[in-house]
Amino acid sequence: MIRKLLVLGAACALAAGLALTWATAPSNAAADCGGGYVGLTYDDGPNPATTSSLLNALTSNGLRATMFNVGQNAQNNPALVRAQQSAGMWIGNHSWTHPHLTQMSTSQIQSELQRTQQAIQQATGTAPRLFRPPYGETNATLKSVEQQLGLTEIIWDVDSQDWNGASTAQIVAAAGRLQNGQIILMHDNYATTIAAIPQIAANLRGRNMCAGMISPVTGRAVAPDGSGPSTPPSSPPPGGGTCTAAVSAGQQWSDRFNLSVTVSGTNSWIVTVTVRSPQKIIATWNGTPTWDGTGNVMTMRPNGNGNTFGFTIQHNGNRTWPTVSCRVG
Image 1: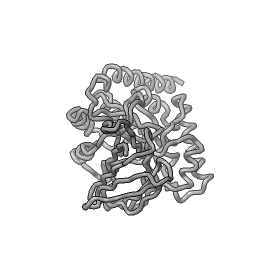
Image 2: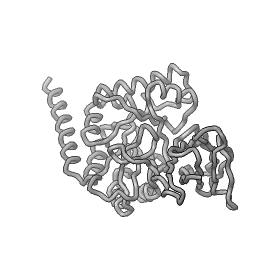
Image 3: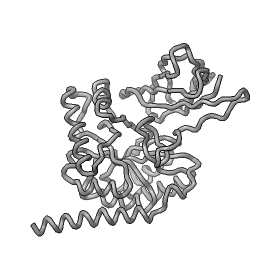
Image 4: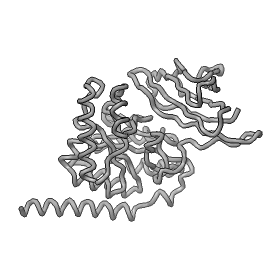
């Protein structure tokens, strides 16, 4: 009994200490976030060996992040889940056992996701709204279960490769490629990842960027209070009016991925999509595309099928999302 009380006291002290650290750390609200917001994400926690160090590094550098927790880890370490919450982090679902969900039945997928929802809700009082599929693997069956549970699927734009032995310098360089609204994949349990945090924070400040939350609506990084689109609306054209193009993830395969673009503000729009070489757009739907001479810039116009269109990118090793802008036609 005495041992249990000591463990409980230590856990409470940890949560309180982290909460105090966050309260006194530099705030994004006071920072210059004119360059936009990015989503820092850490998978596979909580981990008794590393989570506390990770949280201390983040809070002492004024950063907030999204923790995609494995359900069985959350159940086994509820005090660490509460410490994540107290430190100002957002908490997402990363399945119960980190399996290959696309090889499982609907009922097995439901169990993986529901048990994780319950474990995190029991620890924090709030069920997650974000879900990251293990290995980034997804399909229609998984998406259907996510929808039933009110979860938004979150992949990533930049892979830090920390799981693949990347050095601290390489992790910092990967984070340096983040653009407004984009998300980076990192993990809870690597010393190199934790060591990269001060430089990631400094580099973001140098680019007038801030760490934000991931919107459950768009799946993109936005301000910590959820305000603002991940891509600013385009400037009003001479004829007046504005439009906004919101990008969301679709299906993904080993060699390609789908994106969907929803336009708001007008029914007469022109959207420019610029892919990042060596990527190529290999299919489109619900719009009329034209191309520049390089094949890297696609201009999409309505074709009578509404204000949402999509396309497939053959990534050729570069999974970064393209830049998308909108103007009134």
